[in-house]
Amino acid sequence: MALKSKLLLTVVLLSTFSLMYGQRFPSFELNSEWKVKIESMVKVQKQTYTKKKKKLLIFSLHTGYQHWTIPHTEAVMQIIAQNSGAFEVTLSKDYTVFYKNKISQFDVIILNNTNSHGERRDLFWDIFNKDTTLSKQQKIKKANELEDNIIRFVKKGKGLMLLHGAIVMQNNSMDFSDMTGGSFDYHPPQQELHVKLVDPNHPLVSSFDPKGFVHYDEPYFFKNAYYRYDFRPLLYIELDKIKMKRERPKDKIKYVSWIKRYGRGRVFYSSPSHNAQSYENPKMLQFLNNGLLYTAGLIECDDSPIEKVDFGKYTLK
Image 1 (tube, helix red, strand yellow):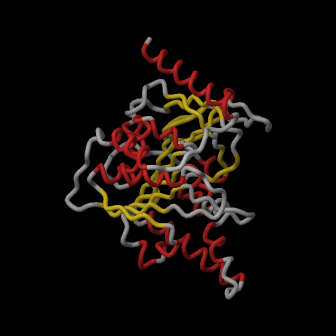
Image 2 (cartoon, helix red, strand yellow; image 1 turned 45 degrees about the vertical axis):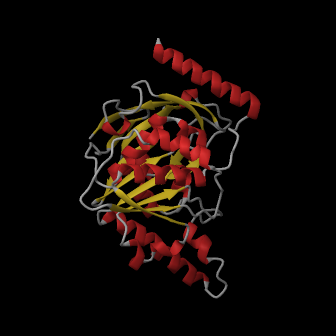
Image 3 (cartoon, helix red, strand yellow; image 1 turned 120 degrees about the vertical axis):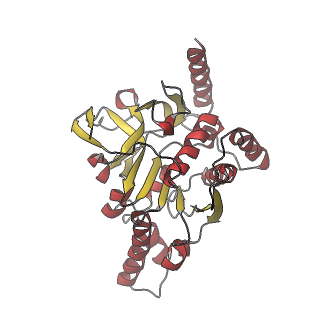
């Protein structure tokens, strides 16, 4: 009864917002009051002490769509990381942190809504394309070098956490897609979503109720490496519940969060959330903490991939 009451209350609140604001939650500026609210929820999380703190980079540069939650997401992940006691945090929007002599100093990188734009969908190309002193070939070479630095960073044993639009960063690169587990395809309008747990017993989703949770978000759909399903899915949505104008995909579900090994490194992706209001859920904050600890190698769990057998039918390898 308690769970049904909570879900009903959530649905009522979300419906109220929908009526008031159409297809969007209202944006709001990041302020100290909101950060204090997040800190009060995060401080109850168990701390994770290490002999030597892991060096964490939270990178928040975008060249494409500007998510209003970028500063909120940056603040949330900084609060979570510092509260854990396991990280030394660096915040940056300077692309030069991905040069070989700089990226090597970090243990984990969080890509915070690092959307690119245009046909190339390549954030580094977007940056170098503004330099009129470079030829097209030089721009491509420089962009590829920085992307390769990230890929080698993870392959050699480091951690990578991608949040929401970060998966669009190098969206047309199959190498990047191989590493992250997929590329962004499109999303139907924001709507109420019932996000479900693939395995309620998996330690990374331990904060959520076994029946999942309801929130308001963009239902992200993916392409490229996604259809290899070479990741361990954590969260999913059922497609027959999604309101959409395009032709409905053949698959029955879409995974919206997963983890995977890439070389010796670890990758965590979470599509939730487009809205900062989602961070006001302490269970979501714990989930993000778990994901961060996983990428840093501080949580051991099953990250073996799944294998697609038929649409809507999956077996574990």
